[in-house]
Length: 112
Image 1 (cartoon, rainbow, N blue to C red):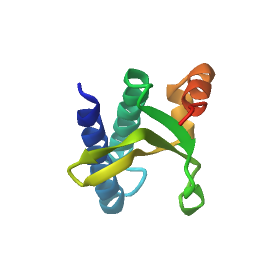
Image 2: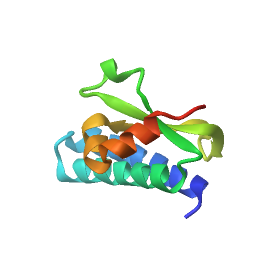
Image 3: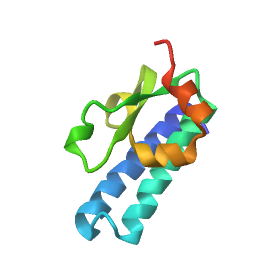
């Protein structure tokens, strides 16, 4: 799958996750499934395109229920919702379960 297609998929799943969370609650099976699916696609993006993406601490984590990372893009990408410089947030705990410590260090230590 192309880089841009993965980003579009992450954005679409993120919107669906937010709707499910608002309609059914953050602990409903569909909400949890969508959140985990989004995180899986974010992991694929970082692994398949390490030259074009990286992790950064989310600057707005304090506005959420848990610590978040931001999946950042080296260059902004034109998407169906406009120019994006990130591929949404990923909960820290999910990132730590999807990546090894070595991978986390690799994705954080990018020269941009």
